[in-house]
Length: 441
Image 1 (tube, one colour):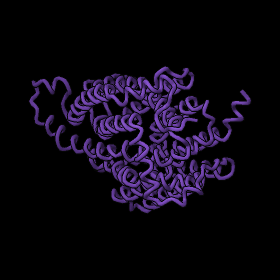
Image 2 (cartoon, helix red, strand yellow; image 1 turned 90 degrees about the horizontal axis):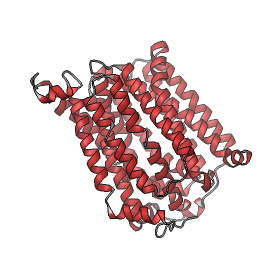
Image 3 (cartoon, one colour; image 1 turned 60 degrees about the horizontal axis):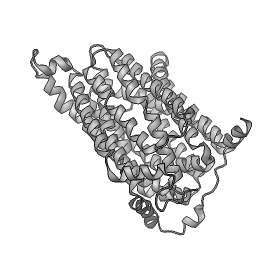
Image 4 (cartoon, one colour; image 1 turned 180 degrees about the vertical axis):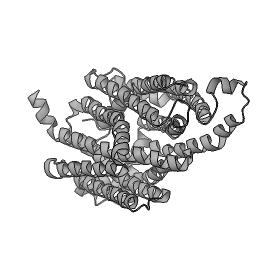
């Protein structure tokens, strides 16, 4: 046990402090979403917060990985964290001077997305460099555990802090968590080098292209990424529609939204414990596909047809319990199959391909709620089947949308699990041969 703790000490310090900082950031984001929706009453306006964050992230990620692989990972993380804190300070100043507007949040989220595009691949590679290979699944489970804990605590703490002390208190706490994470990384975590100096001699465009070339040569990984891109489109439509439905339904409200989010966190927390303690599966790709199929075939339908917090919470738990299992197995596949010196560029290529659907999904979700399904249900007659299934009043249109994305999610899972490249890649990993050209360690 002591040996394990010693081997994982740098990772544990980074994990604990960065998770603490993530809690502060999540609380600020949660409070700002409620602040914005209460003022606008529009799902589209609220969803555009995420669109503004993800758009620069997706566009620039392909180049950010080349930057990440060429420069010191620790310095990149420190600089990006500092910039994010500066953006938070700007929100605080604007709020305290009663000058905060919607466009301010859009611009600041865009800058944060830009920094995240550089920071995330650097952080992912840093975890690989700090973690012995034999602990990959356990550390993936631990990271999922902390993310789940953040999801559970965020609505409770953020809502309580806003009610008792105001939005400013949430932002001050966010800045405090940043300071703890920044100083811990600066003083106590040494991230090993991964050949950054040699990569600086390579042109930026050529370096960025190597990530795409790697995926082109390794089609199993590429098609898994495209699978996740399709799932992300559906999941981001879900995320855009959820606040609009739960804040508007007769049995909903801020408290119910917080409770449902907390159930999501409890589900991923339980799933994280499961994946941390579970042995390695025989076929990781099959686990990924099955976990997503269960998620897509449960939560969306329960949200669509449910009219009480209990049903919504049940859907949230069933939909998210197996997601840590999917994430951990995907993470292990990437860390073992992609050589560490290439990971920054490949992760960034993955980010561009896998996450470009997220801003599209958020925008589409908000648009469908505000312009299509809510007007559709508002004009429905009382004795029709849609009203019997999905109810009446504001929020019933969002319920119809959940039914639609439930069908879409199941269809996507069934189609991709039969993809020949994904099935072949799963069999190759099961046989322990690795994928062509991966350079397993």
